[in-house]
Length: 110
Image (cartoon, rainbow, N blue to C red; front, top):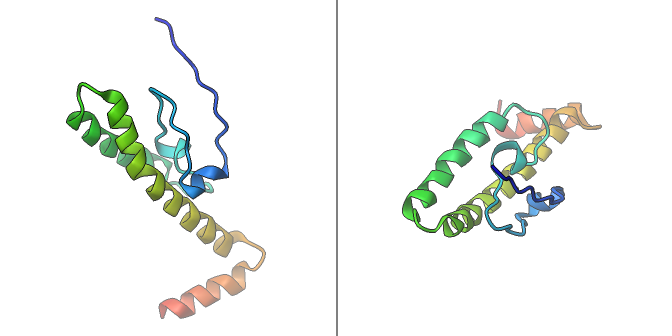
């Protein structure tokens, strides 16, 4: 069986919802959700797998259309989650972590 490998640089552009589609290739899980290590990778992989199954079922004869439809939904969602995760990571472990956490607790009314 012959396999094709496509190399693409994956960086912070995903936090902007940017990904140039490559025919026959998409991203799911940790690859699609650039976040600090927070234990959500398996959750995203399962969520993305289920989200990808929907357009595949709707486009059984056109997998490329299914991948494009999945990415149209996934990329904005991934960008939002990546930004939120980085903000949470900074609040928890950043330079001003104690003050940031205190401010978050007060703003949430805890």
